[in-house]
Length: 145
Image (cartoon, rainbow, N blue to C red):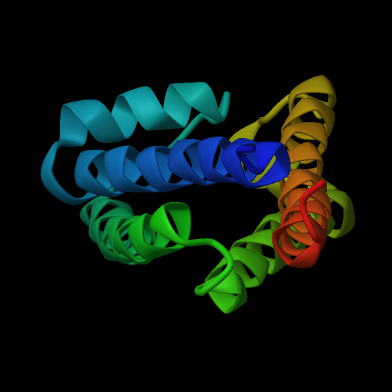
């Protein structure tokens, strides 16, 4: 019998992986795509050369995370540290949105509802990774009947 929690975990990881790869490429190579990504975050941005450069560096990190995510998506039980690393990253992003919400609103004019929705989205994925990893791990060692 197939390990249902493992397959669900892999599906979530493929989404996380693909989104990091896509955002990474967009931020590294195209100012037009950078602006599209900014729209996803509902941010108003001053497109200075400094900001564009910082986005390109961020894109490189996101792309690298996406590449690491491929290994985790293919074999989450073997690369569980990467899975937990993604969960920690997502939960840190939730805390940043909560703790720094005043700064985020002041700097980027992001509406509070969008900040809350983003935090909820990242929280759901972070929790899903941890919960599904635990179920997948338990299912992989449980004897089949």
